[in-house]
Length: 420
Image (cartoon, rainbow, N blue to C red; front, side, top):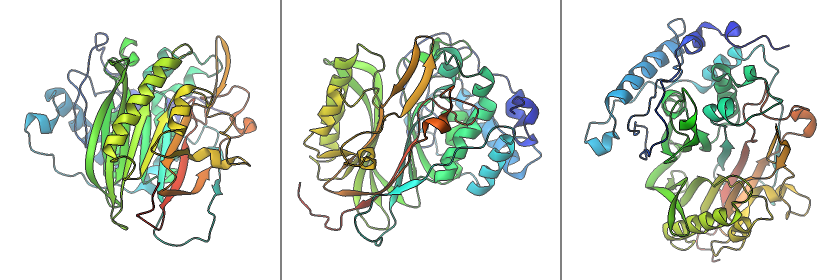
């Protein structure tokens, strides 16, 4: 039985449990973009809930990092590259297994994480270079989870950031993605960037210009999309932050697209992350945003010459126009999770499942699209079953988001010059 958050915290995260929340931001306002592993928000607090204390070697070092990072972010409102400031010295790496164990200690009074297995989708025997593991996940913005989303069957105790962040980190560390694509990130500066950069990831964050998180009292700043890749596996060739348009108007939704070079194979590919407009009644708007994103990606990939992977919460069922646009695009895209179906043509029955005051919401909204002429899906992580999710649905004490993570292993086709 769960026994409450703060009382079960080990000394490692006690500082986070007792830290003051971020100050009020004063309502919605436009925010800049930020890339790499540096700060980029003008006037947005990054104090939040810093992790760590002096009783653990790992977190004592981390606490110093987060404390100095928070004060540095407050003092320097612009991206260091934009301000012409020198890049900060690299921080000491941390051991992912040690961090995972630290998270598990914090979560010891919660139900264990549910088992999910990878489904082998290879059509021939294993061989060749290591596959590229890509993880897609809408992690649920903390401000929205506590202040706006109205998960009527989820106790507020289950949403406390002091432990929920450990559930998120546990999921990431368990699957060890080479590339991580996240949506609804509103604790980038005080949690994900400091931690993941020390795990070897290069980090990029692009906030929504008018994030709904800013409407929530004592929020932690805007939410947005974040993209992380392992620097020992890939080299960044090009990066683009894209503010999506619809009907020729700039919208509140964003995307990040990065061209990477695989160290092992020398092959180039593009990885993109996005989060389209939510809500019923906005189908045409999502369609326009999807068309804009596809046009941008056609330019970046030189008309499909560079292999492409697109991760996102599209807020669209497979019956929507935006889904058909991606399926029929000249970029020759396929949805990876269709391959889990018996005929290889059907999406999963759900990627999000929650209960709100209006009723139960069970939808397929999240996708990993890929260039089917250039990439193979070696395996995909199976979804949680209805029994594993439980009658109160998501989020819960043992799953931190209302969306399920999607994880795929990709390999390049052997013929790099294979035509569409």
